Structure formats: structure tokens, C-alpha cells
Length: 377
Image (cartoon, one colour):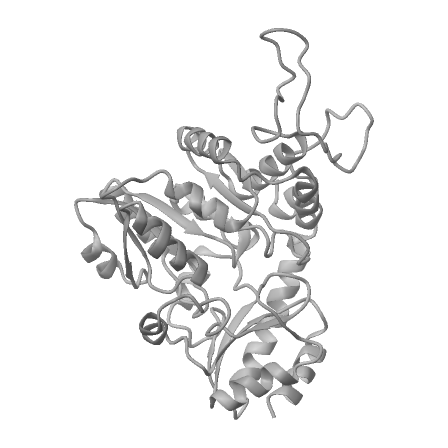
């Protein structure tokens, strides 16, 4: 079944006795039992809920995994996978990550004795050089947030396999519509479901998709124990959002291609970071492992003043800290997504007072450009 069809039909709902096309919201905390030692398959919604279960099966089908686990937020999902590791364990991670992930690694992980080293995971040599006897996992974003760096997932999987490491891939930016890391060798795929999977900026969610059932079982136990599960109503919103994922991603990318080229020609824009540009250093890797380039663009203005004025002057585009929704959003990584990252690490990664990040929506591209044009003057 094609990905676009899975988006619409999800996990199938043929068992519904009512024939309802829409998956019901089972707004229940607990479920009754037919008798001692007997169960309907549902006991308590922290463990499982029918609406959430349908969503999880849909996401697993989209990613080609054996199972998916839905969390209350993307950060809750990342916190759960950290529980797979313990004191003394070491993780090699991409050197350009969402600021919340860095905050998690440098605070929660560090307090639990888990060490993280950051390298350019686009370089096979850098990955190999970072591996230690205590290394247990390789964590990558591709494309990265916000500098749009790309990692060869298959090459990273080969390194992980040779060194008995777990490969974890954050697939939030491209989604399973454009990229399927499990088919390329990933053990775990992470999503902030708040973003493209939801697509409407109206709820928070996170996902872990597993390639192996034993790994899924461990993570389900962690979720059951810690309790960061997705609610029935939020699960319904994700199910509804995913139905249009294929259509939305096509439009996000169509617009982003046009806008990235327009930004490249603007006199106040000094650099554009978009995986679909011909001069992107890893465009061939992206073409090989992905079916699209996505809707995220970062760009560097000629001065702090120009960047701040653009944020103040946008009208159609909203100055907000998120991405992946139908509306175009512009973000200032320095003070928003990466505000908790050290100044040294930000400067090393190019996250400075001139950098802006654009989540291109599904409006008409001419209207987005018109707003950018007046804001960037």
C-alpha cells in the first residue's frame, strides 16, 4: 500500500460494529473486565487505549516499523528512550540538534551518568572516531535543526551495526512521507508529532517507532511506568491530521523550493540552508535516501537589525516557536529553540543573531513571498 493511502486509511478500522468511518474517541481512563483473569484487551488507558492504539498502528505502518508508541510530547518520547541507557553509557549525536534535545542530553542524561559527544554525523570518519568502548548508540537528526545538515542514514547504520550500536533517527522534518529511516537500517525513529504529523498547531505529541519487537516491549514498559502517554482526544487529532499528511508535505515542499530560490536572490540574505538547493553539500545523499526535501528553510540575514526587523514586520507569516503546521511560521533560533544551548555551542554551529528559520506553510507561495519581500526590505 502506498504511503499516501496509509495516511488516509491508517490501521484500518474494519472491526467497528457501527461502520463509523471516523475512529471513535474512547475517552475512558479505565475498562471493565468480563471476569477474573479475563480482559477485553484494555485495562487502563495509561497502558493502552483503543484510539491511541489505532494511531500507533498507523504511524508504525507509515514508518515500516513493528510498532509505534505515542507519547504526550516529543520530549517525553526522547526521555523514554534515554531510559534504555545507564551510568557510564556513551552516545554519539549529531552536532546540530534541536535545542530541547541538547538540553535533555546535557541535563537529564548527564545527571544519570550518560555521556554524549557531538560530531558532524555527515562525516563517516567523524562518527567512527567518536566511538568508544562505552558507546551504546548513535543519535542523528537529518536534516538537522536548524542548519539543515544531512546524514547518510545507511552509512550510519553500517557503522552502528559493525560496532553493535543502536541507531536512533529523528525524522520529524521529513516525516515518513519523504523518508523512512527503518528501511535504511535505523533501530528507532523519533518524531515530534506536534509538527508535521499533526500539521495544525493544535496539540502536542511524540512518537517512538521500533524496528524490533523486543525493543518495543522495553519502551512500552518504560512508558507504562513513567506515564507520559498520549490522551485519547489528542490521539484523535493526530489521526485526523495524518489523513492529509501526503497532500500537505507535497505543498510544503513545492512552496519551500520556490521560496528558497527567492531567498537566494535577495540582497539582504547572505546564506540559505535548504536540502533541495543545488549547492547543498549533501543534496545527492538526500536524493538517494529521501523522496523529497521538506518544507524547512533556514537563512542568514546581513545583520542582526535586518533579522529583528523581519520578525517584527511579518504579517501573513507568524513569528512563533514551532514548525510543520499549515501556517507559515518564522523562528529566531538564538532566543527561541536554542536559547538554553551554550553560547559557545551556538556560535560553533552558526546559530547567531542573524539566523532565521522558516517553516513554510501551505498558503499560496506568492503570498508568502509578498510578505517576506515587505518584511526583508
